[in-house]
Structures are given as C-alpha cells and as structure tokens.
Amino acid sequence: MDQIVRQLAAMIRAAVADKTPLRIRGGGAKDFYGGALSGEILGTSAYRGIVEYEPTELVLTARAGTPLAEIETTLREEGQMLAFEPPHFGAATLGGCIAAGLSGPRRAYAGAVRDLVLGVRMLDGKGSDLRFGGRVMKNVAGYDVSRLMAGSMGTLGVILEISLKTLPLPAAELTLRREQTPAEAIALMNKWAGKPLPLSATCHIDNLLYVRLSGAVAAVRAAREKLGGEEVADGTAFWHSLREQQLDFFGQAQPLWRLSLKSTAPPLHLPGRQLVEWGGALRWLKSDADAKTVREAAALGGGHATLFRGGDKTSGVFHPLPSVLLRLHRRLKQSFDPAGILNPGRMYPDY
Image (cartoon, rainbow, N blue to C red; front, side, top):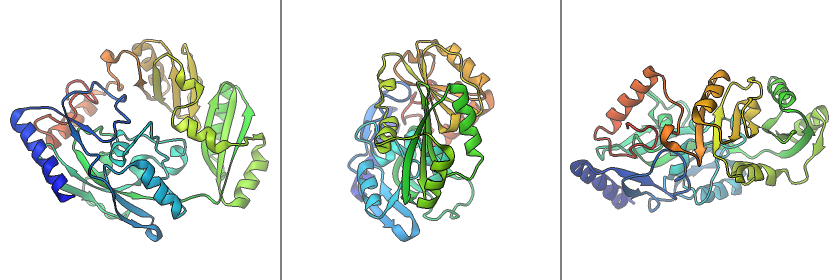
C-alpha cells in the first residue's frame, strides 16, 4: 500500500511540474455532483482496506478507496453503524463519501459527516504526505483540518485514510406516517425536535409526514403512542429509497435543487415539487425555475441553494459565497494546493 501512496504523490508532483490539472476519483459515484469534471484522473480505488477497527472504542480507520458498502457490512457485524447514514449513489468509496460531505436522513439527529471525522491522512497539492487529528474525539490541537476535508470536494488534497467515530445500532426502530400539510409538518417537526423523543429521521412529501423512531425498545414504544399515526410496514426500505434518491420524486425530469434553510422556514412558494427532510432544515426541489429565483427564495429562508443534479451549471452549482468567505476559501486553496491542480472548478469556477 505504501507503493500506491508513493505513486499518487509522484503523479501530483509531475502534474505540478507540467501544470496539468488532476481529477481525483474513487468509485465515481458522485461524478454528477459539483462543477465540471476536468483533468487527468487520479484514481484512489486501489488504496483500500480497513486499517484498524476497535468496536469497543467506537472508532474505525480505513483507506479512502475502501467501498462504503464493505465498511457498513463490517460495522453491522459488530452491531454498529456510521451515524451520518451516508448516501451511496452507486459504488461509493469512503474517500468520496468524506470529500462530498453528504449525509443521509439521520444527519439532523446524529450528526453530519464532519462531526464524526476524527483524523485524516492526505496528500496535498505538492505531494506531501500529511496527517491531521487522531483516533479519539479530543485529539485535536490547532486548526481542525480533518473536518475541513469533509465537503471539500477534493479541492484541498487527496484523502488517503480516515478515522471515524461509529455508533451502536439502535435496539428498536420503526416508522410512522400521518397526513399533514407542508406547513403543519414543518411546525410538528420543529415542535418534536424540542422534546425528548427518539427521533432519527423525518420526511414530508405529497402531504404525508414520515417519522422514524430509533433507540431503546421502551422509548420507541412510548414515543409511538405519543405521536400517533400509522406504522409503516417496511420503513427501512422507505428510508433507504430516500437516502439513495430512488423515490419517484427524484426520478422526475426537472433539475434537482438542495436547499439548506432554517428548520422553521415556512413552505417555499416555488414552482415544482418539494420534499422536506431533517426536521425542516433540508428542502429538495424539483423545478425548472431559474437559479436566481431559487437562490433568492433560499436566502429568504435563511439558507442557501445547491444545484444538486441536472440543470444548467453555468450560473454555478453552489450558492455564491459572501466576499469574506470567498477570500478564506481562496487562501485555503492557495495553502493546500498552490499550483491549483486538484479538482479545479469542482466547487467554484475560479479555483
């Protein structure tokens, strides 16, 4: 495996010398996400395998090319899981999962990708082999570069290894469904979030509110009686379909927008269909509305909008940054990738 790291580092140094952009790629499951793909492919799929797993310590370290499915299978055998419930969208790898920074239905209740990252090993834009963080929650001094890598889309470095906090699988889990208007559903999700309920996922679509309860058997049973509604026979399949965007909602032809808002933001008056997750904080929109209209609506809701799939990317995939944040992004890019060869244009057109 050390030979693979040396080869990757040599490829980066050669690209710097030749001023050749590199396109970092694991399993290719997230190729649709972000800006235009360009450059010579730097593949990480060969650098795979679990380096260390301590179930009693709830910590796993694995190489970037390790299939996400393999990691989840190993964890399930020990009665554990990745708490942020990452989407796969195909043959996903752990490195791509961290670089994309995407979390599934459990995110609002168990934490995001970055919350569970303990440490990383990476190659920067000069081919230097760097390590940050560690394998325990408090082993962080100075800048938390490990978590900075989550959602960086490969623009700051090539992730080699990741240490993650794992969590036990819940003893009991069930899904409830009830009819609610969008406004009623958002109000209920926020009300429930302020109570000691074992919530682990919420979703509203087509005037139906779905709620997943996870935890101790007694707690789930008590919450089920308190919340009411119809129990869904195969709730696991529903949440898997939602996570992997296999519901009919996602199969429609219009571009798919991902809006991160204040959880209390009222229903958005935009053309197209909407699906609400994360207690109201995540709104998926299937619409032909132009980017300006969607982003203005997101800003009014206290958040931002990302063109997730399809559509015209010329107006930018990610929400435009305020000038101060844009300067910080550019300074980070300059520090980690001074030659600008790693995934150029994947996040923003000018870097």
